Amino acid sequence: MGRQLDEEAARREAAQAAPRPSPSASGLRRARLFGRTDPNAELILYAEAWARRIHFNMTFDMVREAVKQPHNDPIVTVAIRSDGSIESITFVRSSGVPAIDDAIRRVIQSQTPNLPFQPALARDFDVIEIRRTWHFDTAIRLY
Image (cartoon, rainbow, N blue to C red; front, side, top):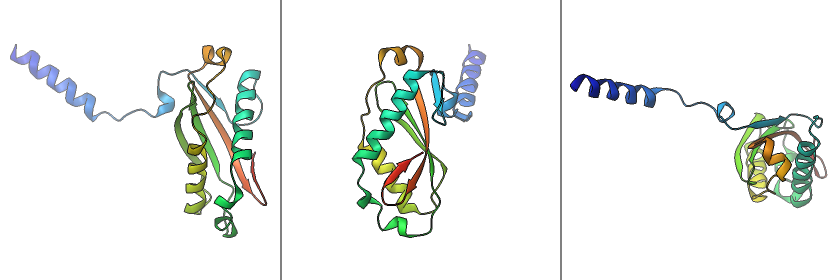
């Protein structure tokens, strides 16, 4: 009995010490849209609707001063769950200006909840990862 308890304690300690897998390593069914083309038309429609919503609801005033500084066009991956909630916001490439990166996070969070997936899309995926390049000139554009 004592040996069995010791073995169970050792397993628990090993499980706690093990590194946690990244969200993309989860058992959830994921779609990754890192461009604007995919064979799944529902996926494209959802991603384009998400990008339009960001584009039309974000005021340029949020970043007007920050984008006057030298910066890169940030590349951002947003993981959206089937219920429309945000799973994660990941900067693949930062703008190099923390104020711009923070504004992007605030914009994405301010648009939640997103629309839930349509039934056909929800049958296939639990999470959609949408990657876009954010470009700032006189407006905000997602490429």
